[in-house]
Amino acid sequence: MADIKLGIQLYTLRDHIQTAQDFDATLKRLHNMGVRVIQISGIGPIDPQTTADIVRKYDMDVCVTHKDFNRMLNDLDAMIDEHKLIDCDCMGIGGMPGEARESAEAVRAFIAKATEIGKAMRERGERFCYHNHDFEFKKVDGDKTIMDILLEETDPDLFWFIPDVAWMHYAGVNPAEYLEKIKGRVKVLHFKDYILPDGERKFCSLGKGLVNLEDCYKACQKLGIPYIVYEQDIDWVDNDPFKATEESWAYMNELAAKCAE
Image 1: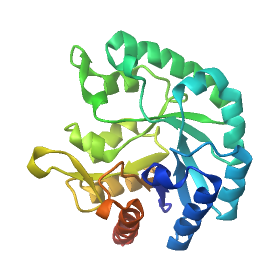
Image 2: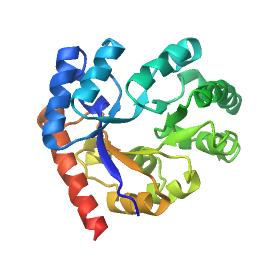
Image 3: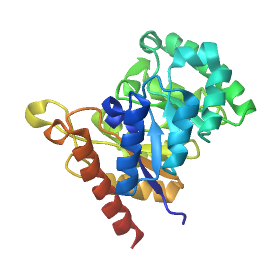
């Protein structure tokens, strides 16, 4: 069984990657923590070649990105060129546009656009990926959810997923079990955790919340999912995303060691 590669979703540290200087400093800090895998998301307007130079400087494996869907529709060739610079073969979006969520017909119209993007990506060795939140598990077509439609009506060769375990759990789905449904369509899984103080969702460092991350890790081992990255949108420890990242990175490595026994 191949080892799962652990990494950090840079959206967690988005306020610290808005300039080339800050991006360099952030990757240096992660490198010193032992991180060698990143997902690039929320990065500032940094020259693509400069981004690539910094990525190589710190020996980072960019497993996937989150990019703007509208830009994919209008500037895809340039985006693929940028991904080639960082040796990244997966380009994702953080969620479908708001108007695509309003009905089953709107979801299917989104799928049609995403499929064309996926075809163009595949021709150049890239893959289109989709990151879920909780709204995809709401019913829009009888008993069918948005996620059901995405799974059933997309081409597995053209439309992959970046599942987020916390959003699945919050939607009332067992994430470890649900990963079975997406088998063969996942390169990167998002590890995220949350609590519900007074019934209000609050994100937290990994291992301190309601998600059974050990079961999720074991599911990745079973299904051959090669990458797990930590992400935390807000609610960082002491409002410090680096502190939260350090805590969660330590937890991930402890969990990996435990599951390797």
